[in-house]
Length: 172
Image 1 (cartoon, rainbow, N blue to C red):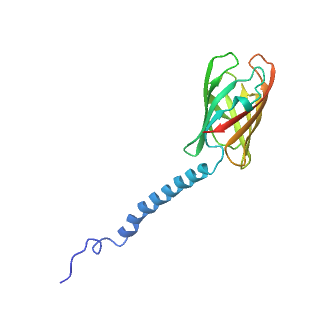
Image 2: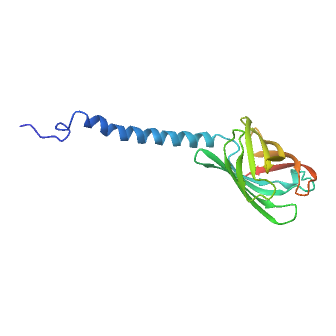
Image 3: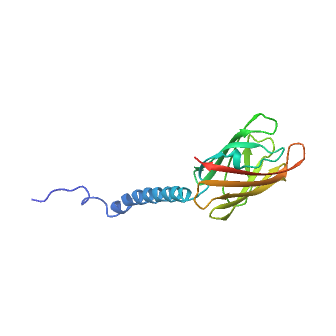
């Protein structure tokens, strides 16, 4: 006696169309896993804490005590907390890509756009702009062991005075 099996009585194209959602879901899942792995391999990702003993903060430069790089979809979110040159707490956020294009920054009185450019696996270049005009720029370099990051910045402070600072951060 033959058993009636539901898929044997299905329309010939039904089996193929039922496989499409599974294939699409698998492709989407693999895409996000690939993004996550790409960020996991990025030495800039994670929480960084200022090491004041190894840093040379120039006059007029803000003191960023913690900086966090984290995945935000297919972009990177950079969150900065610290103390401004006026002694008041600062908090700002930037979300974008390391592609050299300007993306908006929120919470920073000195800049309204930032761009980051990947120079090599451990080095980023960056520019800060206010009203379309470049106000600061520099480089961020992560040590070969991935435990330290050095940020060199040159720019103009809020009063228009030039500053230069080199800060060292330890990975948390």
